[in-house]
Length: 124
Image 1: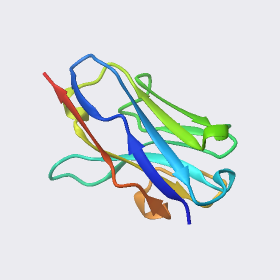
Image 2: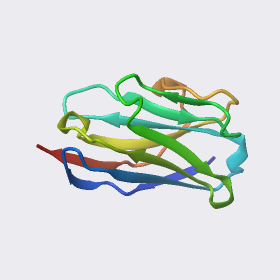
Image 3: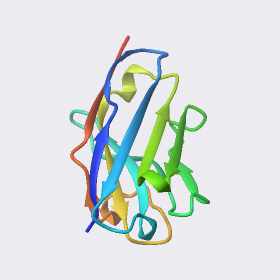
Image 4: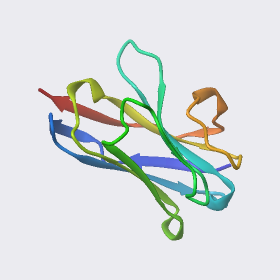
């Protein structure tokens, strides 16, 4: 089973940027698709973006299209989420998750493994 570790969260002002990283280990990275999810206090976990193992398929939630970019460096077994033009409502714990399927998914119940999350706080 793949292990995932997120990093890159922090405090940023509205309009600012952050880049999150998801480092994978313990299994063949190419066998998995990776998704980013977030959970704000009192809200359900929601899918933000996902990328297939070939990087040919990218999905984004409508709320982040045009502001967030997902990418993958297979040589480093790492997936990134570049977040620009951040808004206070983007404040949440961001998780990366892996799915051992060819198609990536933004549904949390489709995922097989999870990281522990990294907190992103956007101040107004």
